[in-house]
Amino acid sequence: MHTHEFAKVWSRLAKDYKMHMENGLGPSLTEAQLTVLEVLEERRRMKPSDFIPYLATSPAAVTMLLDRMEKNGLILRDRDERDRRLVWVTISGKGRQEVDRGIQVRNEYLSHVLSRISSHNQQLLVYLLGKVGTVPQEVG
Image (cartoon, rainbow, N blue to C red; front, top):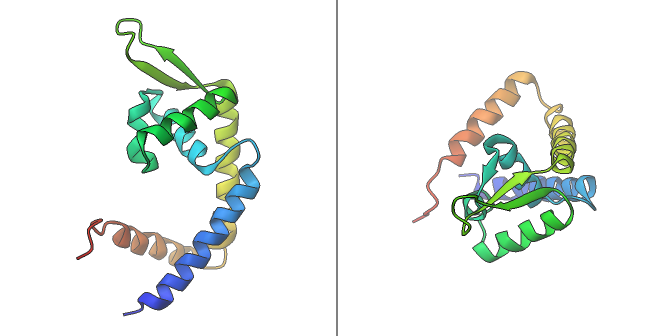
């Protein structure tokens, strides 16, 4: 098994990716905020609790994240007209601009990394990572 080698490569790639994203997105956007904006682009409106599975974090952390995003004009929060207890989150115009910029930052990095291997090997890598990514969370 090649777990040690895989761990080293994965760790280095994750660190490089994180550093590139932080530098490219900052100071106006974070990776977590980009995730929220991408999900909102797809789903149009969501309740704050709907973001939890996408962010793998606590409800309190989601609330804090959404607070910062609203303060920075990336999202809008509105009470439901029929049930005032419900809050709907939508993307703002500024948020749409930032999600486009964030996707561009990510795509530039990934294109650069993937350009080191052939198109066939890129397809193979995506396939293999898809197989690895389907492993159940519980490791026993």
